[in-house]
Length: 406
Image (cartoon, rainbow, N blue to C red):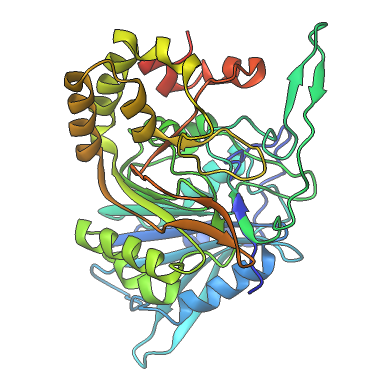
């Protein structure tokens, strides 16, 4: 089976934002409508995932699409698509009275970087103003690299004695085209980090779902704790074919807790042979989890990290990119006694309301890594020390809350 990966370095930011130009009269659409729920799927596919984005749009149109309405309340499905070789566009997808599914282009833009902060903020804000619903939900679809600083996953580096950047040698990935990461926009390969992402989100979302690699980290969930009620993400990589939109679209629009669990179940079952991790996180419980982790670290756990056997600690990475380990496995190994561990496990069970994983992550018929334990969220572990990543990690809200790196 040919597979590609999704990685969001959620490094969705570009140093230079392209002009946000609309090819139609904005005034035509500045009409407030009373709507029920609005789901926006944001596809940043001006990259090697373009064909998968087109396929996912087709799957969306074959799913449980909401009906169009002229007056009164109703649900709205929006798709923003920035696909390589095409002008970016914001579309509404709906059924008419004859059950025919239609794509209505609301705005067509001049080419721009969909991962710049100004563009993403403008697209999301415009959609929220156009359809001021009682409940907004957001899916972020692209390449993804968790909490890492912009560009680091693809081009990792350290610093020499003189402070200059020294590239780290990494094995070339034979499955690079199999998976997704969050946030990559061509031609410059622009990305957006999670701190910027949290800043550009214009409304509070019922849930944010990452159809992108490695976004199921505690650092991501904590950074977005005030932006949504729930988060769906994978601690490991995500195959480029993404979530099974035809079967989950109705659940995504419904947005209830049981429906979000169903989304996770269907994702897991879709990739049970090739491998998957997926978790549903209650963002409102992230402060409690931070408190529990901080107490473990403060009461002796931090001193235990340098002595860890990192090869036996559960990881969710390949090719030596050892920046994503299981949070529960880490705490289990460094907690000074059962009291602190019990407090952590209680907080973790409150924060992660659904989790599921296969026994291994497999690509091209080969096991990439075994999954012996899965707590639902990954974490960075500063062992061995990495001056570049450690310094960046200090700036994250999660580290400021738990003091993993001081």
